[in-house]
Length: 430
Ligand code: IMP
Image (cartoon, rainbow, N blue to C red; front, side):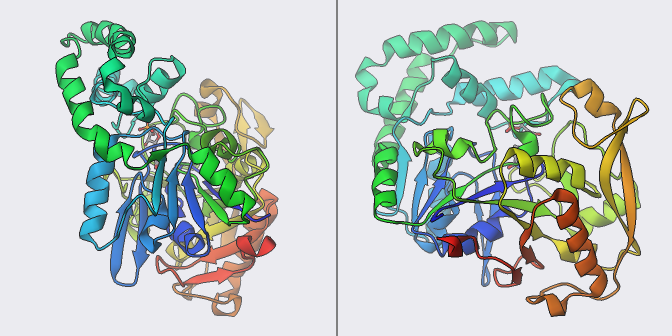
């Protein structure tokens, strides 16, 4: 298994950035295969903090980085992210960065629609990142997207704009907004086209060749399994498939390309935006988790909702995504808690169940069933060996492993790259 796929096994924000950064340094190619600049990955290397939304994490270490066709690409967001990273001394050229030429674009009309819909939904809003992700995926599936390759043919783009604008103008009229300004849109596309096209290519070929040469490919997932459009807490989800299976369709490699599937799992649970969250804590314990864990969104700076670890959810995520092993993160946030609870299943309409039901109506009624464990007084912060951990912390980790029916591959004990207990190196399986 030469490749590694990293996915979030909860609602995103599990601490993927640090793990992906560690793995990227051992990979030959890093590939994003879904999502867009709704993602927020924070990498801390020495004294420098890098914040990435769209670029694969390999870019920081100079590893070949690829945006696959499964991503939705906002070219203006890409341009400013690249400018920001270049300002931090990161070099980004066609030698270390490529974009799939069949990648759909996020346009200003998508951002408009995302924001208008959320504002109109009031209390029923999804709580999106407002980046236009959902509307861009809708246009891809609706066969009216403008894609990266179309930027090379702007003189022939009128029929595509007819299809796109017929759809958006009708929607915009419903919101009392003027039709799309086609002249302005065309001018914006014309201006950004050379910048994007400099990186555009059929990346499936490049990946095929890399694979043939025995390269180690790291697939970098964004968001988390519970935000998957099929398997998540629908409709409070993102608009892409976040599960490991998307590696194949979102990059152009076959279904056996995923390799070792590493599920990133936070030692407690957080969620940004609306939707069901059975173990949410709205009391001072939730507050304490949020403060100790610095639980604010990387992209939108929104406060994350916090709660106890939900083993039933993670067990389901691991099964759905075929997780080989998990990277457990932010264990140090639980230092000093007198007692710690783990959700093992739910009570729903008087019955005990061990999984997340599909219906939103049922999800809203779930009452968590908890088991309680004694916490630990010592510190886990910065631990790099099992022997550095308090006995109760080891007991907690082992219990999680048992309940989610998936082994722990690493335990992360601070944002620093090396503060990790490595049980199994996913890349060592080749
Ligand atoms: P969208 O992806 O902007 O459409 O937002 C849909 C839902 O996914 C909202 O609840 C967002 O808060 C959530 N979401 C999107 N991207 C991320 C992420 O990278 N981390 C955590 N939540 C996310």
